[in-house]
Length: 263
Ligand code: MF3
Ligand code: CO
Ligand code: CO
Image (cartoon, rainbow, N blue to C red):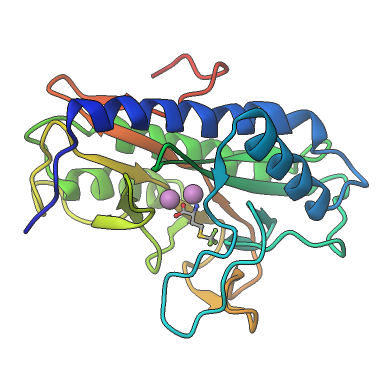
């Protein structure tokens, strides 16, 4: 048992899938404008993934838990107080001041690339900007704690310290995950915890880190659609996600975008 290390051939395929997921996020930015619906964003991403990338959008018809209805769209769009897994809809029209997470997972040649980032419609509030920036820093601090021989708890501890040190809270019910030919695999990568605890990281492991950080309290509520997760207090939530490979020196970010140079 335990976490399977990727072979060189699998790592090559994960680099391709990761790069493709990143390209979708690079492409969609200019479409995030007031008046667009989240359904418009879904359609644009779906067509790009299927036609330009010759890949498969992993969320479409995906189900994780018994009894959960299949996810009906190709991407997740989580606006303002939606924590994650927001379902694109013709009824959700973006307006100035909205902030949203777009989460992309593509399957290419049987392997998954999973990544998300925050977008703004017009100018965000001072609070939204701060939440978004701190959450991205949480992701980067988590990534920086990764290296062969480090432990899973080091990632969670780094994220939790930065979020709570800025008076934000860490969502506990969802976590990063192993990924490869399976979308959600071992290990569970918690975004809170204690340094020097948990499973030891080994070169060749691939998993996501995807902290969900709330402006208010950490508690969440599931909507009746059984996918959309919102903050219980209806305050803002932010999330950023990368798929990473553990190496001897640190982490290789498989879903890195051109705009990111600090990693
Ligand atoms: N991409 C999400 C993650 O980071 C999972 C979305 S599952 C879906 O793990 F079905 F909602 F798309
Ligand atoms: Co993920
Ligand atoms: Co994702």
